[in-house]
Amino acid sequence: MHGIGGKTAVEETIARPLAKKRTFKLFTNQDWQLYALLLLPMLYFIIFKYIPMYGVTIAFKEFNMFQGIWKSPWAGLDAFREIFLMKDFYKVLRNTMLLNVLDLVVSFPAPIILAVLLNEIRINWFKKGAQTILYLPHFISWVIIGGMVYQLLATNTGLVNILIRSADMKAIPFLTEPTYWVLTYIGTGVWQSAGWGTIIYLAALTGINKELYEAAEVDGAGRMRKIWNITLPGIKPTIIILLIINIGHMASIGFERPFVLSNPLVTDVSEVISTFVYKVGIQSARYTIATAIGLFQAVVGLVFLLSSNYISKKVTDQGIW
Image (tube, rainbow, N blue to C red; front, top):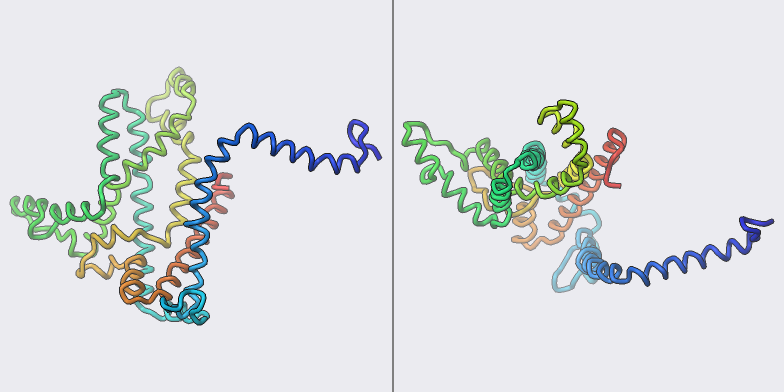
């Protein structure tokens, strides 16, 4: 039997790998600089991300630092059984999920709103100045931010409460009462991260066709109508991708913010998985427990990520992959 152009099926079968080989060689010859640039990030992920995954086996061993990972005896699922029998584990899991949900509800829309507002500003010098001021908190260490929060919001010595008491009002326990502490935690996080998050959305806004705005103006659309019908739909794919990624991090939480802002009076709401791992796993040298909790977080995060991506694909036909 003859194929296209008079070639037999056997000739076509032989030609396909040769064509692929020539295509690969052509790409590598033309774009070898790009492949060379890609080599360094690949090495980084292999060395610092994939090879350390071997350490996950600590979760299934009675780890002894003098024996090492390989020689430590296997313990099976004993570490996980111990974790799930801990009352404190469920408390820190609840706190982690609660703080992450509140962060998602409050902190996630903040950079979107800021990006849209900055995009609507027409005075360039004011726009650049506002962007600089909004970005600045991202570069401040959480240790410094924690000191600033205590200087401003401490019940007895904080500047805010001094002003409140000078107005013959009762001091607000921002850092010593659980409800106020959660509000302070969320508000501080918004202030620190919202400005930096706008960079991604501002970059997405530059990809929107300007002719759409011009056409909307001709049709008599106002500023709010253009934002609702052009700006937000234009950055919708970016919003969905970042939302899925944030949902994937729902079971994990950074260490610095809760550790710096926490104090013994609010541990019922401030103790989260990362600080729990530090105290139980690191300070007590129970590395098996610490690794098991980390593996639990990773699995739950993967489930959240896959689920949110699946739902997004079904509902909006958009996702990470």
